[in-house]
Image (tube, rainbow, N blue to C red; front, side, top):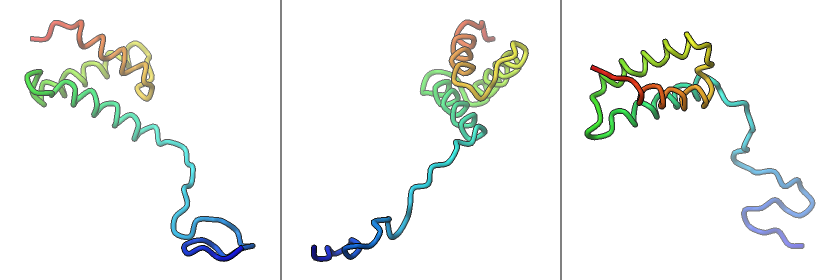
Amino acid sequence: MPAVPGLYPPGELTQPTSTQVIARRADPEIIYQARRAAVFAKLTAPGVIDALEAEHRIAAWEREAERQGLDRLTAACWEAGDRWMAAQRWE
């Protein structure tokens, strides 16, 4: 079989030449920050609330989640947080 431009010559390994995708474990802290940022973005959407108020509400939820013994690194924690924040009477 003739060599094809951009590919290894026949008989050589067929590993990528430039970059390899290496599977790695997700960093729980990065996932936490992403979930928190998503809630912040949802709260600060136009016409909802301002950034400072959003931070106060998220911080209040994080305290409540800790009180309830929820793991802030889980999606379930942030889903519960959405429901909890929606149920609060904020002043």
